Image 1: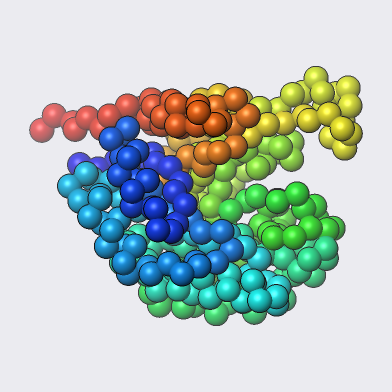
Image 2: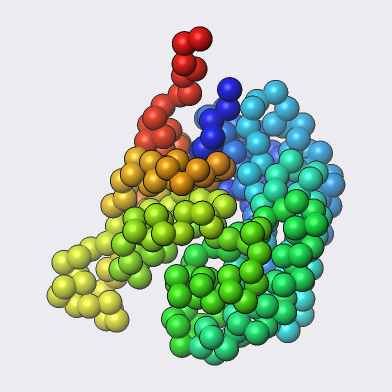
Length: 296
């Protein structure tokens, strides 16, 4: 029997991916999301899939998703490489035994979100159809990357109003979200009602939380020089992940919660993997512990 919801972590894609997974696999991670920044570089995906497959053989762990994070809506050389990365990862999913490719939706730089919808439909209409033909789902991370509704770079997919516009522009069952509560919390959005409203469109979950300093918000607001929120590893932030996982289960979610590390202001540097393994153990407890079969 396998857990319907696996707990894993993100891993950078490249020459060292398989070795990194080999080192952390004994800690109990059940899934790995392999991610690239802007381009795939010189990565041979077929070779990488073989190396990772050899490491995972017999462990029960899986590759949950592949991702490339750049701006696929603009027309610079780097953006062309990001779009090419989306297409290549869609084609490579079967090699890794997964069916999700994730990333930023992109954005027309410093234009209001609504101005990007035509270009979004142009780029992801084709990619979504290509993915559907391959049995692959597309998931957009809900990170604002410092952008607002009016201006920004990288990603339009950080606000539920934008999601409605996006999914109307490209109406397909295989296009959805790579969701996490953190990015909503730092915008002072309550993630729980949002989770219940959008659960059917959530294909992959990033395990990242936040701590909001409400005293700072009340005294200084959110536009001043005083930090009012911090990204956290699950178990160290404000969210109750038992509630999050319960709502995911009620919605019928099957997939992975993969910890997005390297953000926690306390469990970082030499404490990075200490924090991630603590987060892994915490999320497993919130899931309900080990899977126990019912009596026959």
